[in-house]
Image 1 (cartoon, rainbow, N blue to C red):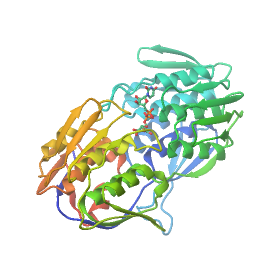
Image 2 (tube, rainbow, N blue to C red; image 1 turned 90 degrees about the vertical axis):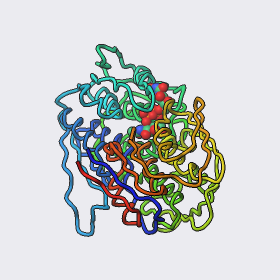
Image 3 (spheres, rainbow, N blue to C red; image 1 turned 45 degrees about the vertical axis):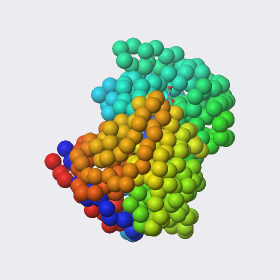
Length: 429
Ligand code: UD1
């Protein structure tokens, strides 16, 4: 198993290219199941989760080709993947595959909408909380699906096709909104989605579905209206920049000091997180290439943060922000309102000398003058990268174990950081 070795203390200076968003690429790839034609996706990140989803889609009969590099392209440019679901050979998504990645459960929507049936394994437990699928099932039922749960599988049927309906989510759910959009796109009649997620990845999926011929109004607001069509066609779509990767590197620079330009990304994708960084004393500016982050001299001020659905502070940046606050000049509080249990990084950060107290959904972080390197263990995707951020500012050497979590969501992390002056390397085996 690979590990990452970090020697802390160096400031970050230079440029970091931001990849396409994993959390947009996944639903976009799943949307390929909605049409017999080819869907071409540009700027897809090279990540373990993308490869896992390609395997899952292949199992349903989706063919894919990954385009070779064109002149002028480097490994920093995302890949172009063409997906063709001309013939779907299997409407079952088995446990062995779905359990490797939760988002693959979302295939239930396009399979049901296009073929009238799907059998998809329930995703099972997850390190960051129970993460149920009840709201996704509710959304499909509102569109007329008959759903049974049997031996760990969701059996969904709509022999005469889905019918437009009202879906009012009692809680904002990104996956629920993706599922509702994909199902409603091919349903007969109009669907209204209330309390829809407003995340940029939802807007990106809606934009791609619209290029495929779907009729969608209001994506990015809490009320989305979808007029179903009888078939969708192929399209080409570029995946939007990864706002979580952007915020992660912004926090890394805030932690170490220095000046880094985050390229190919946009401030409006993460205003709330950038605002919090400004309050912490970091200079954030929009530039032509993307976003410039700078902290020279001044210390890190403590800031209280509550995670919320977009446009609030994202739960996927909570662990990284906590790492930053471990070095703040004072005490800060972080409330996690999206996922219970998403504090797995606290104990590992404590191994580096952080002082954090947990009380229900609130963590109180008392900033310390110095962190000290130690062996630590990655527990989930975002938690792992918070350990990297802490290690970049810790004295001496930190070894991050179980980095396969990082590879699920961060493309060439050690390479991107090393080019900006971090002493970081991957140790194989
Ligand atoms: C997506 C993101 C994940 C991010 C999360 C919240 C992807 C691949 N993953 O996950 O990185 O942390 O949004 O921004 O895009 N819930 C229910 N019942 C359901 C569905 C969800 O109670 O049927 C709850 C969840 O337990 C959680 C909340 O709703 O408390 C939000 O979850 P949701 O937005 O659905 O997260 P995901 O789409 O799984």
